[in-house]
Length: 323
Image (tube, rainbow, N blue to C red; front, side, top):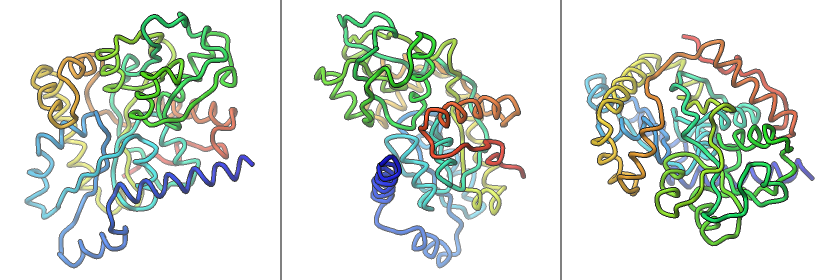
């Protein structure tokens, strides 16, 4: 039965990814690029992160124009959906938190880790409605908790429950993307919501929700940059240019927090105060993948395998890009 459900979920995610990426198939996209004699980098991004800032600034397009490289952007509601698109060849590069690449690698996606951002444990948390009788994580026993399956917050929930002396099976999970989870949270259909910034900050600002716990002391909450192995091996020059521009825009963002919030507000449709709250509790700077980071990812993968959340154990180091 578990295998049937897993297959069904994979099919649903695949269809969603293909829909999000438009009507062209990966083969058609590649053929179009070849016919035009122009290389293309297809980037998947989510509703927050350094990729958003880079897109808004247009620095990558300027950097790659002289090399005849076109940049195409596609937005996704979360990391799992983004990596499913990478798996089927609809995009070449994307960014996610810690958990999505583990689920994707376990499903056989040909991804590679390129680099990561510093830990930002305050950038994700568990919310309960204002006035909720739930006062501690331990109070979540038997409660219904909303989260995006396979996202970073999936691991946060596991570790916070563990720290409170509970098991993952002690709560009832409702797997919902951020927009649907926000609606369920406000309607009282769920008792708690585990979510990441900027959705976390927006909910705090708009609903006066109570932050039950964040990632401090239990998770790192890294953001990773990932690519399809074929693209990374075929276009190392584009990868280098992308990571360099990401690092530059990170430095700008760190030193221009007010302007950053204004810039992203129009793009994301999120109010400035919420974005200031979110941007103020994350760290900035593109860093290489180290043995320590690989070990952290491996611990997450081993935890998910033990809980039966991924179909088989994986070796994270096998998915690290080496030039």
